[in-house]
Image (cartoon, rainbow, N blue to C red; front, side, top):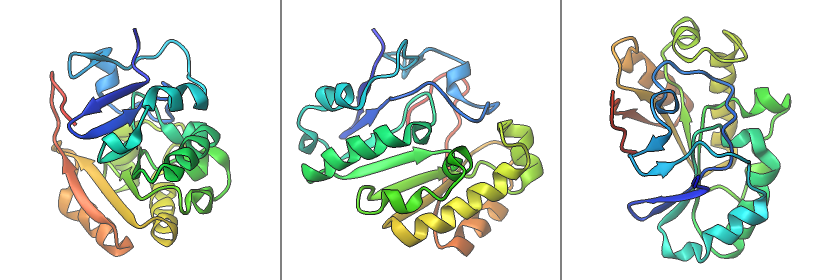
Amino acid sequence: MSSITYQIGRSLYLNITNRCTSKCTFCIRYKTKLFNSKHELWIKKEPTAQEVIDEIGDPLKYEEVVFCGYGEPLVRLDAVIEISKWLKEKKARVRIDTNGHGNLIHKRNIVPELKGLVDSISISLNAHNSKVYDRLCRSDFGEAAFDGIIEFARECKKYIPEVEMTVVDIPEVDKKEAKKIADDIGATFRIRPYYEQDYVK
């Protein structure tokens, strides 16, 4: 049975879509259907917002609730907003893990719509320039994606309390240059470990 929600540590993760606007060469979804060898994240049908809410139960059992699965959650912006409104009514902490394509996907600045609903956002920068990003991430938006991510992150700093930018620890990425980008935006910076066979968030 596919997993709409899955727990790691004291966080609950919401897996609401398989759709993604990148085809990253290092992505775990191309290596296994089972995340951490136990969570079947390749969902057969996208759940409704209500189905996700029903699966969450009491969100205060967790330190945070995170939109993160085998796809890009902001593809389903309306569902993210509906679920997040319910979570904030319950006083839960909400995080989104995203590829940063939200504004490109919806062809408008969606970040103000997340104000007051999202406590933290983690944006996958994944490279230090557009050329490397395009080669590694193979975005639907081509080389425009990288600048789009940076602009998205700048908007997030205006409306979301905690903004993080990350890269995967692979040789092709100049981590120092990537950190400079995050520093310039005012975001925190994190290097995500890369696991060839096993992946632990």
